[in-house]
Amino acid sequence: MQRLYRKRIVLGVGGGIAAYKSAELVRRLRDHGAEVRVVMTQGGREFITPLTLQALSGHPVHLDLLDPAAEAAMGHIELARWADLVLIAPATADLMARLAQGVADDLLTTLVLATNAPVALAPAMNQAMWADPATQANREQLLARGIRLFGPGSGSQACGDIGMGRMLEAEELARAAADCFETGLLTGKHLLITAGPTQENIDPVRYITNHSSGKMGFALAEAAAEAGARVTLVTGPVFLPTPDRVQRIDVVSARDMLAACEAAMPCDILIAAAAVADYRPEVVAPHKLKKDPSTGDGLLLQMVRNPDILATLAGRADRPFCVGFAAETENLLEYAARKLRDKNLDLIVANDVANPSIGFNSEDNAVSVIDRQQHETRFGQASKGHIARALVAFIAERYKES
Ligand code: PMT
Image 1 (tube, rainbow, N blue to C red):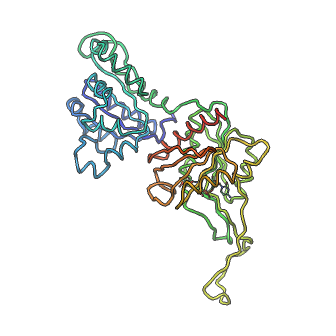
Image 2: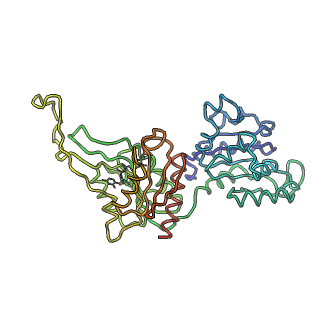
Image 3: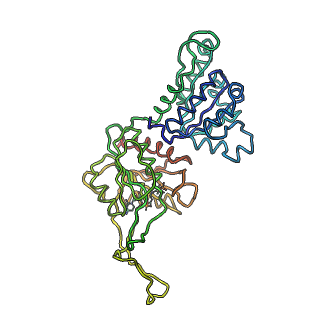
């Protein structure tokens, strides 16, 4: 189940007898490649020890909202941003009621309010409690707010009753969690995505490049594949594994990247997340450049413009829906809007790279998308995986309207 590979899951454990299954769930999620952080309610701790879940998840369990030591290590807002999915299993009747009311009086309920990630509950309770109109009203309210419910299942219960209210088994929950990442929004579409830096050779041993790690472009490729698209990822030199179901083409220079993109055309949507070198040395020295006493301490390199890949593809007769990125250190929105116009784009993603916690080579990002009408849509700080899924959903919607 590749869809869980490298996904960050916050597993909330509520106070029900089904909490014993949460231990197995942590194992299953990790077996499928997910990273798991566990948050327990006070009630959850009565049924299973934090130590068990710490050993299985490989991370300290998060217990209290007002624990300065835990907050210093990874605060609740950080945890909320870190998550690609918050899965609460078991979700008791009380927890469902508190979530339906938007109560935030412990770490888990606060985290649910603070996260932008999808939230899913695996209800587990006595069959009469599940059937109670109060629980059913809470269920409706949670569903209406976009919170997903996995189960419950039906069968014999720990209390001796038979009926609805059993928590699903660990493997069923892991599958349902994986399905959260499969949107089908771009089924049948071909997406061409550029990622990473380019390298422009000076001589056989030296080159000019930039700080792009490829993380943003690769996260977009993964999200697009999960949305059902056929994805071609043209990437400069990076050290990242290829996302599942993505066709990867490795290139070095801007001119290589353009050639690979042209060969991959036609496509329905182009997302240019690569940090392409605008200039390259006019001449690549055939041998390693030696220090030249006649030039003193200086070295002059004559540079020439590289082709603009995005503008070139946006200018074609079979032009795709074009999404650019603008990495800026000042006047972010103004410069991004200018690039949208100059390169004839449909959307541009403005990326403030002056902030080291987002942008180049960081785990997180925070961006604004600007459209042709100059409307700005903000995506607040979250993991690049999370931002990528939100961007892909946004782009799919705008593409369908175009
Ligand atoms: O790779 P990461 O470490 O995860 O970092 C992500 C990122 C910061 C690199 C990414 O989010 C980003 O902002 N990419 C664009 C970087 C950039 O330098 O943009 P630009 O302002 O130079 O170019 C504007 C757009 O034109 C970009 O879509 C770029 O891909 C494209 N371009 C630029 C020059 C060129 N010769 N050809 C192009 O296609």
